[in-house]
Image 1 (cartoon, rainbow, N blue to C red):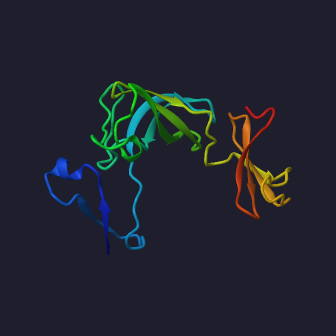
Image 2: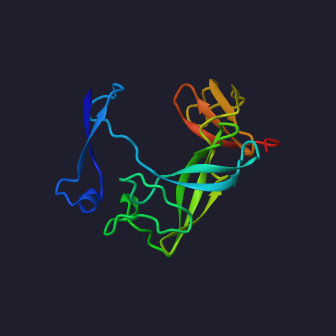
Length: 185
């Protein structure tokens, strides 16, 4: 077994300890000192951008105080690290803000990003985000366009149902670009 130390913001006050470090036991061979990403979750009824079915989704929320990885029901106060800037888990600067969420459809197993709307510190809604392309493509093909950075013709294009953009990935330099396409909605 390997033990990992992870700094967890807000843990001192939550548990009444001085160090703010938790020892995690991991049996799956993760390299020593590797940090695991943390996130909160919520459940929301959403129409999948990929298969268009309405389902109850579990949405991972990657902002605010995620140290305790809590479930935050819609309509409740969202946890933030008081005294920290927003980029370090602190509360937003305005009364109305949007945080990033990510989910996978329980029906089609495809993913998409979501916007989590916070109003006066309350998580009020989850909305699919069409501005950010998913991670899991529906299909792939050799790219039809040279890389805009290195001009290499060795590119790959990924397509996503429900989106009017595709990803162009350069196999030579690693550049990833969003490209508008027609008829892919």
